[in-house]
Image 1 (tube, helix red, strand yellow):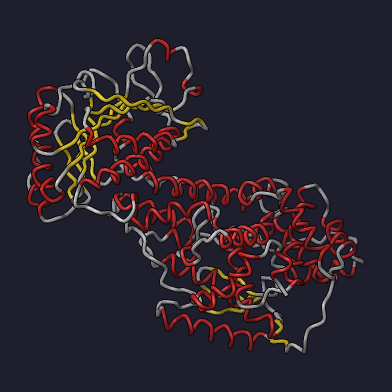
Image 2 (spheres, rainbow, N blue to C red; image 1 turned 45 degrees about the horizontal axis):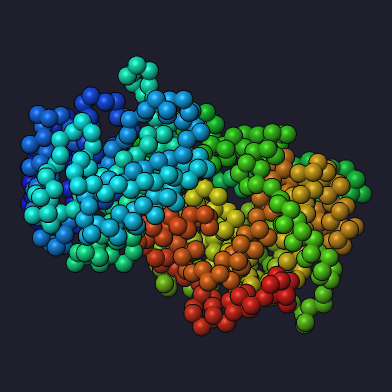
Length: 627
């Protein structure tokens, strides 16, 4: 059973991955002082249990038939003989599923909490490891139910029922190897009928894998105190190597992303003409917006989307972010097909969310708590297209000095509204754009310092999906972009009023108000100029109702809260991510799957950042932060 060259490969510190007789698999990412084991019982349908350990950096799945037991002992012994001397101690963690009993059969699987039983020899050396594992398992939640965990220290009989012991307790002690058994309540599969094949519940299995993975690493991290190995963090014990299936899924999902540009697809191509017609109607007739035709067939693109082999990805963390993105892309493809219809708004709510009560309250506080207009302290030169392009190129050249691959094009587009927009690593300028010189640097920090920087940072990572954006990344992107405006001194109260007005417009849309009614609310109730009111309303009502504009203020508030809580800003520039992905991003960094961002905006230099973030940590009111 010992794969050819396994010992030599381990001795060289290289990765081992070999298929075993009977359908088994051994994978050891690198030299580590532990091995997760699962033996498949020949007399029991145990489907799914093996997947609980395949996300770990060192695991062995083996056929548990008695005829193969000696060979399995030899394989495990060979692994231990190589690794144990390097670390001074070694842990074998065996995982198996408990069998359903009659009492369980009376309770539906959906009503049961995840359950674990830790079984270990009665040895003082294992106490702290077992207790750490117990505590970590208790934090597991599946179907909103916290795990039930019991611990049994035994003098014998701590192996799975129906299987031979790997070795005797004395044999383990003689080679300084410790053993812990972990029995899992199999909520992830149906009970089957009369011993038949059991159906797997993928969602439950994924949730259980994720929780167990964290718990196992915490337990092993505690065990390493008895070895010479000193990992800097428990997540550093996770696998560093990335399998071919991961890159294949990343490639396929990225390929789908490259088929469209969502915002350009749902943005009117006739915004200027629509404004003129709306103005001629005395602001009484709802404008008609035209959109680009879809450049793809929705059915064909969705087929490509679901051809990504997610089921082959063993890492539960990567499966999680891939599935989230797959679901979001599905919704976006449907949404673009619904552009200009009544079906568009429900799809937009699924992708971007709506307006929470706290957010509407914050928007009202800003709008009612700030003056309608303030006089500029001195004149501001108005820059036209040629001057804007020159300034954009200067900013791009600044970033190219640090990262030569930062190659962004600049293009004037007639079919987007005035202003700047980032599309696939290029800067688009709306035709007839006129930008005050005082506003330009803040705008460049917003578009180039955040949107472009995270784009190129993401594409510098092994997972290119970070360049396209993980699911739900837009809120953090826009929140960071507004925060960048604050950091360079370009966020004033009038800009803040516009962000708040977008929230009001989105809320008005959701409540069923027409375009004209929302326009009147913005111009009459809150004093916005007619042209500004039109642009805000157009952004919100485009496509049939786009709720994205509420995320600017929501994202900015969340970034401020993050900074006030001492969060690390540089990590947020690693790519296009959501705040909810931070724990995953940090884990992947500990595992050396991802690296630190290459491009860091100049306003994040420590002295500058400390000076500008100090008021954020001391101030409780957003309005007081800006001039």
